[in-house]
Image (cartoon, rainbow, N blue to C red; front, side, top):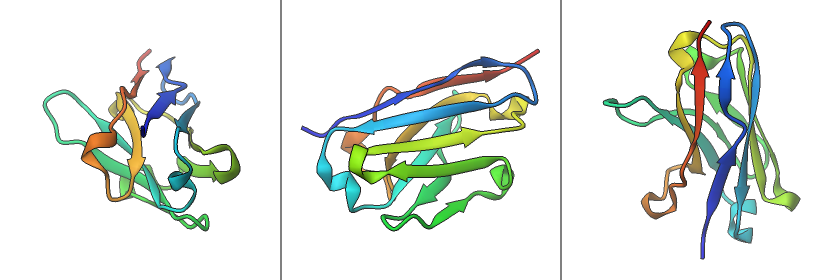
Length: 115
């Protein structure tokens, strides 16, 4: 059974930071590209960061310089460090493979940026 569990979200003031974590249940995740996605109610889910199996990262323009994706493959973990948070970063954040596997979406973790 494949499971992805996100954690680390919360309520933070503008300019603050959070570190999101994603725990994978299956060793296959050591060998595939992973991504962090986010979704605001009523909008499409958006891919914000990806990391290949060998650690090459890429970001959507709106988060470049503020978000950092990383992975610890031996632990089956993927992380998203979010700095300089803005209200428009408010969303539910999910991890999945990149491209995403529809059956593997987890519950996500809510990030709310508000003063």
